[in-house]
Image (cartoon, rainbow, N blue to C red):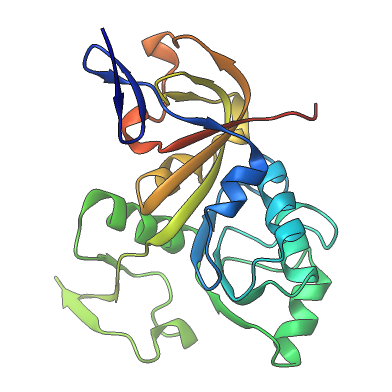
Length: 231
């Protein structure tokens, strides 16, 4: 018996995730939303969804990502096309347009060390109240932050970081939303999948059912699947 549930079909007690186009995925995102985008530069990035966000001209986004990629590639297109009001990231050095917009006051950029950023996301996905890190003590990163001393060592308290949407990449996804990766495409994607209200995965390949040993992101975290069209 197949039952139609809120997020798609069900086979028995297991939900099948809705499969939508990149354009349909982009239409789900509202102006002014906070979006997490997986990827390290252009590795493991949901590029087709990003292209459709650009085509639909969805503005005033808060972009949470490891980097802003290159000026004409994936995440960089969001910056170039004036769709982002704020970036929360670890570096912008590969995209000069981000730097130019920061210096001219067109966008706000909030920097974190890479390990701190991923732990803030991890804390949100794990339901933690925050994280303590010694990274940044004695630097500008400490300014305005709560600090604690534990066993003679000083730590900065960092709050959890979530988003309205997580746009992530997967090498393979099955009909239940389970996601597998090859190599470094994994990067930030698994943590971001746990820390957003709505999670959309763009995958290179759709299969009926992944081998459990391949699964990195369990399907329970995934809301929608986009299968990449351009290879």
